[in-house]
Length: 160
Length: 424
Image (cartoon, rainbow over all chains, first blue to last red; front, side, top):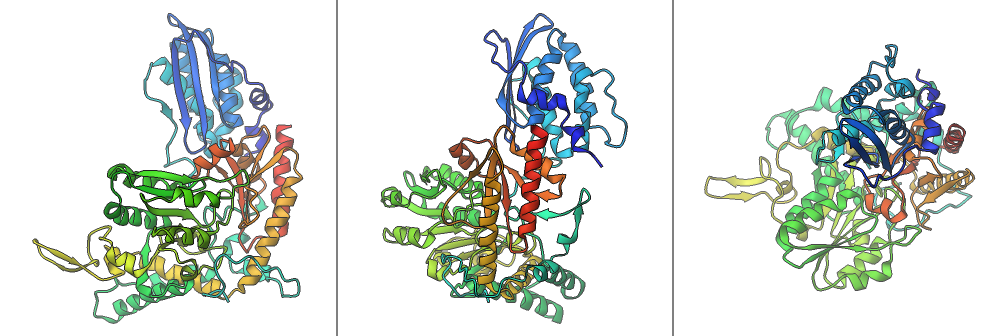
């Protein structure tokens, strides 16, 4: 059985309490909004791209510990990386949190982001972890459509 | 007994001398309450989202499909006549449950949501014009907001809102000012799903009727907690969700005064709702068939009838006393958790406790208490305007049914304290 400690790793608790890069970037040249309508998680992501390189990243918003820590660790991880490297991280992260809960996690390339490996054992919380990454993807693609992780066929339902 | 007795707005009698609800016996009727989750006994307190089902309802469904299934209203053979008798028998049970005057005032629908959509569509389309208004309350479920918005948008009408105070009590004093010449309908929730507030429905109906305005009452959360008497309330429409009152999902009730329903056009077209059809002209069946197009959810109606029968076996004053005790006990116990704030502190509440924990999002609360076997709802509860009013993105909500116990409240509180341990 999945243990709560697998989900709420110390680093996640820490980044929830003291989120890094929790600020608006006044000189951002890419911005994207993401929300998770069933949970109420909301994020605005700011990037300053210097050519191909993500020179700075910040976010604002509200959400659960998983979504906030994910945005905090993500912005820390992608700073200084190229857009292509960030997209590669996005795919690796996504694969890790949606992998078969029984298989050993493949988090080799993810560094601190491996703290989210436990999320795959809590299906209802996967989109909390993914929200900031989908928003990053939209920001890099300069997508004008706000991101939503609203997939009612897999997520927790609404109801009363 | 429950059926059609006390006025729906009556407070719970808590006479100490009366025998208490035999909760152990009641719990034995609900098989799922024996389940374990994550190795712990299930503590199911998400009853406002859906209630659990007694054996009597489950068996009625099984019996129906195993031995009684046929389509209704059209066969001349035994089984169809029997299924029709069961279906119409369920309607009569629903009539008694709500104390409606006539069985034809009861329309089977798929949910309370569909009941509201039916009225919004059929009544709204024919009665709302440019500049007209529909009055709702600040604590409506989205299902009693959005259908009105949709029809208002089509008709050029506007939605207005009865405000509430910081306890989650409606500002009834504002109602006379808000009902004007353009008000065509008042729609309000009987019991708030996210706050637990029991609204003074009869009082608001009287205020609206004094100005000739009909009233729809969303009773989805009231039916499992209160005795309902639509004649005493004098409301024009009342909606019920089957699965929130220990019946199956996919079945609900719309009560409408016969003269209102008679004057309304059909909601959906199809089989069963017609008197005669030609390519030139169709005439409609009388009530309630006019509003029941297509093969209905016969098994659902039978199951809901079984739920009504089950509730009728309970002494309702005992149920009310037990739920009142759970509410007081849970409110006091949760208030002792450091950093916990209750959302919804109206003096008249059903056994629903919404709360937020300082610095912890409701979804983290939900995940952590789940590991202790405790099922609560976390989120906006389909009442985003209520969340905005209280300035919170979401709350955690425990909604108790008569089968819950003080021990389960203790388990909930212990689990919430665990959240504090995880988050420090």
